[in-house]
Image (tube, rainbow, N blue to C red; front, side, top):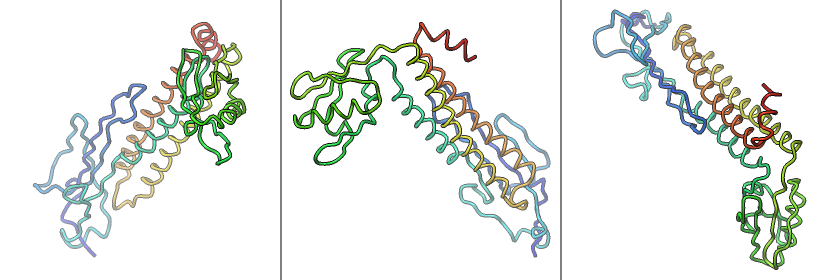
Amino acid sequence: MLRSIYSPATLRTAFRHRLPSAAPGCTTPATAIVALQRPAAAPATTTQVALGVRSYAKKTGKADNKKGGSKQQTNDAAGAGGWEWTSDKLEAKMANAVEHLKKDFAHINVGKASPALLDRVLVKTPTGTHPLDVVAQITIKDPHTLMAIVPEQDNLKHVESAIRAANLNLNPLVENKNTLKIPIPKPSQDTRAAAAKRVQQSAEQHKALIRNARHDELVAIKKMKATDLSTDDKKALNVEVEKVTKTFIDQCDALAKVKTKEVMGTRFGKVYQAEHD
């Protein structure tokens, strides 16, 4: 068995985090880093608290109490050795959820021409089933009209059928042998309300993904051995995980608020907001 010459006060956790409030479009908040290290210099006798830096004692176990200095945790990322936690992977998972939410919102459009409305349309042709953008080029003619240019004339009818069958409330019109005109219908109040409901549902689904990532991270921290991470340090890490989570949840809420105002429009937006506050 081994005895450490280091007392708990000489082992510290450098806690560096920068988590500013993120703007609605931001998906990459700063990374939080936690490292358990043995200092190369003389043992510290005080706990230092500075801006963005907190120090904690590492919990020592029985195996560390017999032979001086012969046991040392190694971790290149932690510098002089020890255990390190970073929020990189956690943030990557949460940022991915926010990006998926943005893409989903792009498909929720009311009364405004956008090629993204047709991104999920699949076209069945004699050669197989293809995404719409493989067999046609979608352009914006005006704020309320899309155009589908189909290079192969034989595919025009297949593109027309696919758009009609996509449950988008769109009725393309044949402009010429290679082109379809796609008017975007003027939305009713019911259509806008249905779109706003879809926005809220999508936001909640993606916030659930973020919370799942938080849960997995908290479970991983909880499973850390007491000899590697003290109870106080685990609590501190849990706080950091919650901060990262809140940053991304707030982003989802901000995106949903903007998208709801967009689909409801000026006329119905105030009424909808008042009913759902």
